[in-house]
Image 1 (cartoon, rainbow, N blue to C red):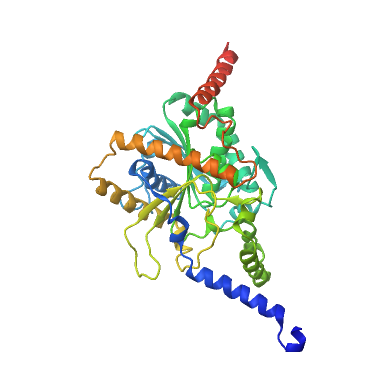
Image 2 (image 1 turned 180 degrees about the horizontal axis):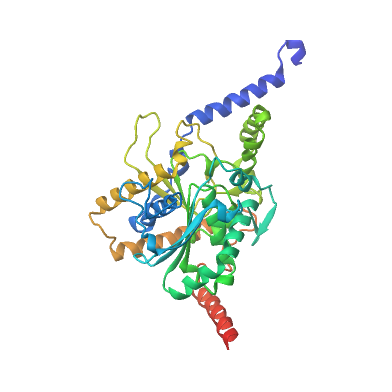
Length: 416
């Protein structure tokens, strides 16, 4: 038929599909990802700028004589840095990191730097993954990032155990940017899963992770299940949290880039989001997501930043945004600056320099309710291996207490 009419039918269908994809992408903006989300409170967002500064401090060779500190400094007391590891120390097995005792905020922080474009070992970590290669706790995780997290945990086990014992009331926070954010998320996952493991028994509520501009590193069921522990922060159009694992092959397959882009175009056009959700091997940005929005479509310049937050199940940054800011929004310097601006605006709006206790408690209840709703929606959408009643004691206080009693009971019996 197409030969008789002189019209190449298959080519026309392909061109129409590509045109539809391009049209959708040109009109799609990052604000659409979070337009239905709630607004974050100052209490929950307060640690984010501070964690960004701690991560930035990892880039310094000498914290006593910093060369690249942001306005206001890193907010770090160099004497309280328990350890600092460089590429020479890690031998490419993990990005550089430091362990900081934040006495002001009663926090033990392990901060991990982001992807170094000049280091081949960082690319190897990021690209060391195939769909379904590593399975953990009924879900899938990024193989290379999990290996790096396991190496850090094994290397610093004794030091972490010591500081957790000496400061038993402190929280344990893992923070990282880009590649380091994925490693931090894996660290939090492993420690929570093992109840502390070699670090001793640690209550789940003492553990948290701030993943700044994270790589996709865990399957959807895990991303939702650990949203009470892991918090991802994304600035506007940032490309990496939107980059599905197969697309990372572009870094190693530049010779066939047009073929890969064509395949991606067809997949985006023909595969529904419901089909993507039901693929148990597909990886996502971890945990609860905080989306900093400071640009509007068809408007010039930046607007006062707004922080939206949710535990999304569907619509979890599935689309890459065609934007000239997609790469710059990934920079930790910009994220630190905009997150601090956003926090200052939140506090000014509330008319207080400190968050009232009543408002804090109300927001915590809302966060818990959103978390329950997300787990319920994951079950409703038939996300593989999703559970509404988590066996980790997420919702039931009794379950948490029983878990802690078993943990502490076993540790005390071991001492006897």
